[in-house]
Length: 405
Ligand SMILES: *Cc1c(COP(=O)(O)O)cnc(C)c1O
Image 1 (cartoon, rainbow, N blue to C red):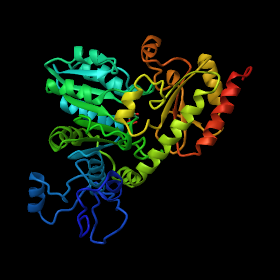
Image 2 (image 1 turned 90 degrees about the horizontal axis):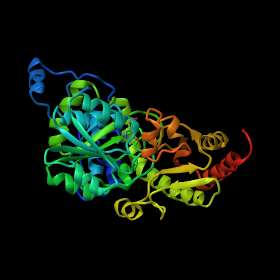
Image 3 (image 1 turned 60 degrees about the vertical axis):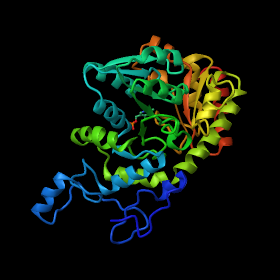
Image 4 (image 1 turned 90 degrees about the vertical axis):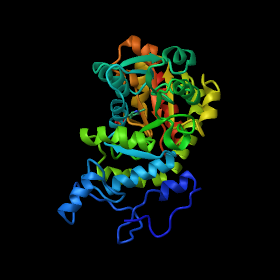
C-alpha cells in the first residue's frame, strides 16, 4: 500500500491534512479510504510470520488489537492534524484517558489534576489510580497558585480538561505546562471540549493530547472512539504496549467512520462554534436565566485567556436556569428541536441536566464546588440554523417560567 505516487507537500494546513494525510491506497488505487475489516493478516511463510513478530514494518500488521491499516490511517491523519509525531487509536475516549494515565503511572507516583473533569475521568483519577497506589492531588485548574503549590519535584504527570465539563472553565495550558515541565512532569490534556480545530494544545505545551473521538471527530453521533496523540516514544513505547495487551484498541469500522469524519470536522466545528456564540449572546438577553456561560462571552472569568488560546469559543454553552431543577426540567421538556441527551459535539443540538445525569454520582457538596447547580443545563450546539435554535430556546424558556407543567 502507498499514499499514491506523489507525496504530500510538507507545509500543508490542517484542513488539507484532514482530507489527505495518512491515506494508504491498496493496489486498486481507491479514492475513498478502504475499510480493512479484518482481525488477522496472512503470512507468505513461517519465516515471514517469525520475522514480523520480531519487528513490523510500516505496512505490516499482525493482529487488529495491535494495529490495522484503516486504524493506522486514522492515527496518521489525526497525528498530522494535531502536529504530534504519532497517535494510538482507542475503543473510546475513556480507553484513551485511562490508557494514557495507566500506561505511564505506577504505585508511588504523584499526579496533579484539575478537579473540574468529565465524570468518568474523575472516576479514573479518584477511584482507580488511587486504588493502585498513585497519589492524586486535585486543584482548581483556573488557579495557577494552586498548581504551583501542588506540583512537586516528584510529580510524574499533570492532567486537565480545557475547557472543562460542564462549566467551561479555561485553563492556562502554557502556564501549567511550564510549571509541570520545570519538574519534568508530563502534561496530559483532554482536549475534547476545545476540539483539534479550535485549540492546538501541543503548541501550547501539552505533551500528550487525548480525545474522545465520539464527540466532534465523529460529530454525527455514530461510533465510540478515542485517540492518544504524543511523541513516538510515548505513543509506541508507553501507550501502545499497555493498550494492545489490555484490549482498548479501536475497531477498523469505527476507525473508518472517524477517518472520513475528519474530512469535514473543520467545517462542522467552525460552523457549530459560530452558532454557539450567537446562541449564547441571544440567551444573555433573555429573562429566566441567572447565568449564561460561554468562553467568548465578555463576562466569562477567563475570557481573555480563552481568546488567546482558542480560535473560537467552542460548541458548548452552559446555562443556569433561575428556579432550579423544576424550571430546568420544564425548559427541557418544552424544547422542540434541541434533543435531551448526554452526548455532545453532534450535528444535532443536545441538552442535558448534569446534576441528575452526568454528575449524579457526585455529592451535592461536590457538585456545588464545581459550579453544577440544580438549574444548570449543558447545551451542545449542532449544525442547525442558529435562528431556529434561538427560537426554540426562547419559547422553551418562556414555557419554563409559565405556570405548572
Ligand atoms: C465524552 C468525554 C470523554 C469520554 O469519551 P467516550 O468516548 O465517551 O469514552 C472524556 N473526556 C471528555 C471531556 C468527554 O467529553
